[in-house]
Image (cartoon, rainbow, N blue to C red):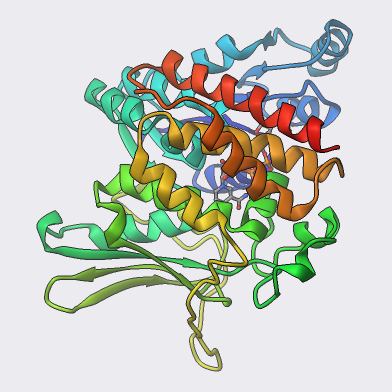
Length: 380
Ligand SMILES: NC(=O)c1ccc[n+]([C@@H]2O[C@H](COP(=O)([O-])OP(=O)(O)OC[C@H]3O[C@@H](n4cnc5c(N)ncnc54)[C@H](OP(=O)(O)O)[C@@H]3O)[C@@H](O)[C@H]2O)c1
């Protein structure tokens, strides 16, 4: 385990839990990056006086106020965020939300660093590019609880003996609802996730089931398993984090508290394990239930499978259109059911292309954002 940790998305849900876990493990936080030069970020920077501090965004006034509040030299802009990922001999925890995390993932891998990847959008949008970057000697350890579970179930196994990957999904706050009843749901209702406390985009994506769709694509690129051998099952208690089925009919599953500090810690320490960051887990008294996802009510899942199968730019387009549609829903410019409609139309409208470089991915991302934004503007 390297002692140095770079935390990207430091002010977010993953970022703050990473800082807690890394501090408990006695690791050194060598860099902190976030988007906004906010007071909360400045306070975090003051708590870690040895860390390099980078904010991707902000106006010139906001940046000035931030630099004064931090009280030591700070850096600004996306290129500086990417540069922190090149810190020598560091584990880079990528907790940035959205395709904005791709450049940092690629830079860290090309430098030979370990990437503890929460930013699933890196793999969804840029799967082939991230896979190529692994040739730089870096290492990719998933943080997403389902993929951490699969990763751990696969340790020591021959890939040829894997029959299927089974991703579990809580079903989100609208499990069991009819399509009609979802037309008028509010952002507050959609943000109220039953088992996980997460950032805004992933919470809405869990309500639409786009999150599970993105995770299917993430699993395909992480574990090199065909889409028809990746299944999704609803498991409302979020105790079984995912499972692998082997050709002999055996299953290996990963269970425990639904608490992101566990997969974050494993991504920092793997293949070793450190003491649990949460209280002891007990199975007694719990009931675990499983059901098929409702693909009519939640069309996002099949949209993601189709985009994954099509490959090339399609997953990047799916992700970018969803990012734009989720933001519009949160701002009440688009209804809940409109999110999947905008993504489906954007996938039809943006021409398919191969993606071989980060720029190819970001071109497809930009075109999809423009298309989705104009579809939403036209619908308002
Ligand atoms: N939260 C979870 O439990 C969970 C579980 C599994 C996977 N994930 C994945 O982890 C990632 C982060 O999710 P989250 O829930 O932690 O999101 P979040 O709470 O919204 O935090 C996102 C973080 O990314 C920063 N950020 C956004 N754009 C950036 C940019 N261009 N450059 C640098 N930093 C940027 C934000 O900074 P500002 O605060 O300044 O905007 C914030 O620190 C997502 O990919 C999500 O799918 C999350």
